Length: 258
Image 1 (tube, helix red, strand yellow):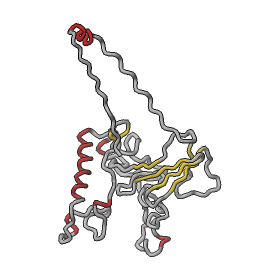
Image 2 (cartoon, rainbow, N blue to C red; image 1 turned 60 degrees about the vertical axis):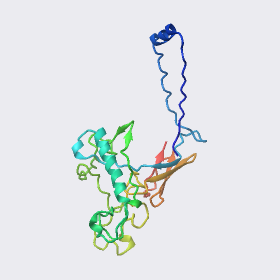
Image 3 (cartoon, rainbow, N blue to C red; image 1 turned 180 degrees about the horizontal axis):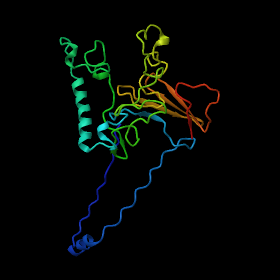
Image 4 (cartoon, helix red, strand yellow; image 1 turned 135 degrees about the horizontal axis):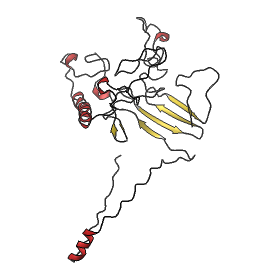
């Protein structure tokens, strides 16, 4: 629902010219400084983050190498990025002519163009805008100096402009074997709907570039529940708690908040 604001305009007519000149010559009064924003509070006195949220965006996770250490898009680059996304929606929403081969580019699919039975544009909701922080259009979700994933100790760094691939057994990572679909135990946990495929459930909780990038946050006195639209995973964050010491590693991590 769009918020509507009302602007009240006051006008006064001054008949005497000397008085009007005096008003013009008078220095303008200093504008009052805007009040600092305060987060609303819930019934427990905590900052209220409850409600529905989305992290859908066309900003990539890692920065393209061509940007170097520049972390923002120029206005022209923003128009190009967001304009191309809007154009893809218009093109993808055109009626599909079933008499044409699938390779004509009408079907935009995660697996490529022209895959029988794949999604058309109407099923996608990847986001339409560049992510902005303090009004600045960012060219990567990562805030490292070069916008890349830091290399893990003993691991090979990801190529510039690409985030590191998920490890085997993590969401979205299929086993590297020809018989990956012979048994459920050999399939990726995302395919088995144990946790969401893509990157929505986390940690970290990132947009997947396709759809279902919505979240619902429910706060309690001692914990916060974050439910992901993708596979309806729910991540519980314990407030003021301590990390587990029993050696069990939950799929969503061991989340503690303060």
